[in-house]
Image (cartoon, rainbow, N blue to C red; front, side, top):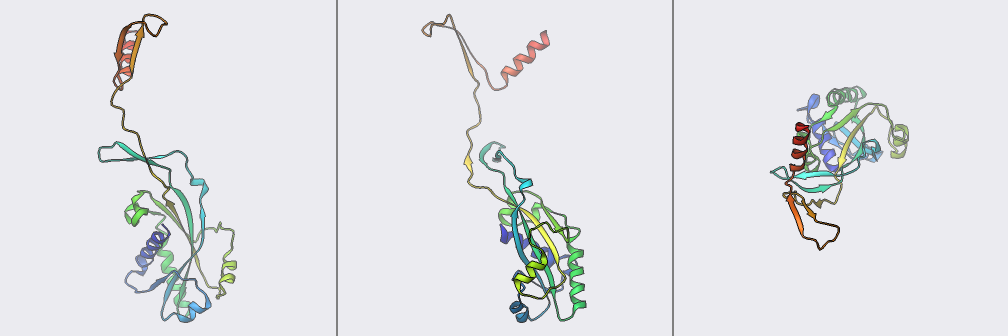
Length: 219
């Protein structure tokens, strides 16, 4: 799932205000060694934090239906995870880096929600809309200054981009067949189980409700 979110972010960054620019998008850690090896302008998107959004956790199960709209399998609801990216621009001049960061900001600000049709693989198969936030209030335990210190790189202007993505819950399990026959009611002549059956009546699904409605109408 994480590599699919990477692809979503790459598609967003290479489109919008940066479409046709040919700017490279990298997911490497922006360390000093990495910075020394780069050859041209780069937008770096470093995934620095992954944690579950417990406010989105759901109980119960999700029904999976076939083409006849019959429930054939069930699974647990997906778990949602916040993937936090440190997005920076790397060029030879600070002014150019600021222009690239401005273009990234202009590209991501309108994209608060990502439609399922824009999501690849198993992420898109869930059919769920994915939220995205850019340059919002940081809620992770580690500050950006601590992250830069751990990377050993130079502090640069950055955008905190968070994509909250669903992770499919496994395993799936088969659902029972749909009910096609109603319950049978047997009435005996007494308390003895050996007494003959005086009446046997079968109710198809929904027939009990129809009979109750008819009795209310006569009342």
